[in-house]
Image (cartoon, each protein chain N blue to C red):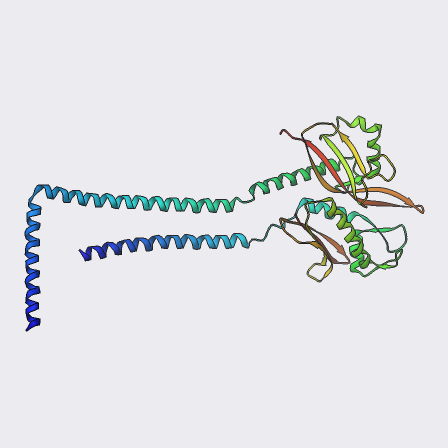
Length: 166
Length: 207
């Protein structure tokens, strides 16, 4: 009688162990899946909207004239001038200094027009090289989108990148 | 001695128990009625096992369904948001078509650059002839940089151009950043002055 009880108890134990094994396997699988799926950083792909924003910034005429007034530079040219450490003669100011100040003003105005943006980062850097300018504002919470453009200056490639969060 | 006696007594008791057990079992099995009840008992046990197995299968099945639902909910999270984003991106791309029309485009070699002088012309009587031309419900352009209070054109230092408005209802507006450029002549030198603006196009929805 006792032997019968022991054997049936052992069978139940085996079934429980089998079930626990299945649960453990599924949980481990889920954990692996979750880790992989959450490890993927949010898409920072090439957003059309941010790309258009960047293009319109780069075409904007500045108040900086390197040679004579009114031969004003646009931001695309000014990025190159900053890289070459040139000076805005009409303002008697370094191109990089002017670029830093005026670009921040432009970006702030753009961000004001978009209520949903809570963070932006603007970078100018040499390809495979050091950063030249970095302007950022806010804390990123939400979807990241970005775009970048290349500028060629004296056989050197500069990269302008903009990232926003909304 | 005492130990030996108790051992004998124990043995005797066991043998008596075994004798009664076998006799009773024989008697029990001899009776047809009792045999049937044992069969029923065995049958009940089998049914119980089948039930157990069925419940187990059901539980495992439900568990896997829950796991599957969990997987699906993770897989399809943000799908609606992604679809909306794609729709918006395609709308923004179609804004390029409007901005590249010769009627408002500044330089044919560049996209999303509007000619401020052309915008001014379209605001006047000339714009009436274009009412059937525009493939959209409304077209508006306003300057973002340099920033300032919105002043509707035509007026001094204006920054808001309402090029076309069909007056339709149920219109969804899509916008994108553009450059608003004009030719300026200073000290007999002509240059392009570009500012940042937004092109807002209204599309009729079926909602």
